[in-house]
Image 1: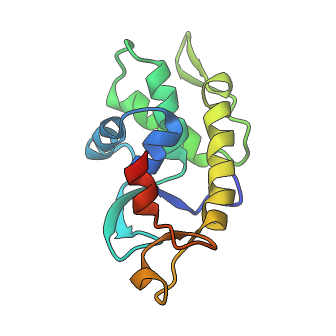
Image 2: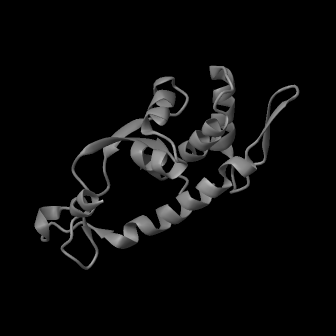
Length: 152
């Protein structure tokens, strides 16, 4: 994977990076395919559900298979394959004789976007208890992340 392989993303972050609705990832968590854990957000005192990084690649791969009915067993195979990948090259996975899933073209773009996001997310945001009571802000300003989100 990447140097950030141990990092987690919130379900909303993973869904946004994969270009899918958060409900799609939540459903896979409920089915027991993607592990979910609840933990404190890195910038706040609130708690949110987090998923491992490969959930982004998995969600994108499953989105590209819309209309294809897959059994839970096959979905778990895809998840295990993506989870155990040791590089940014995903290759192909044979789901059954005659059915091969070529993951490289499906997930490369979102994986690159995820890597860039992880490298930069802490560069632009800060939390300082002395500034606005610890609200997450844009570094070097007193502009809160909430106010930016509200304007969007």
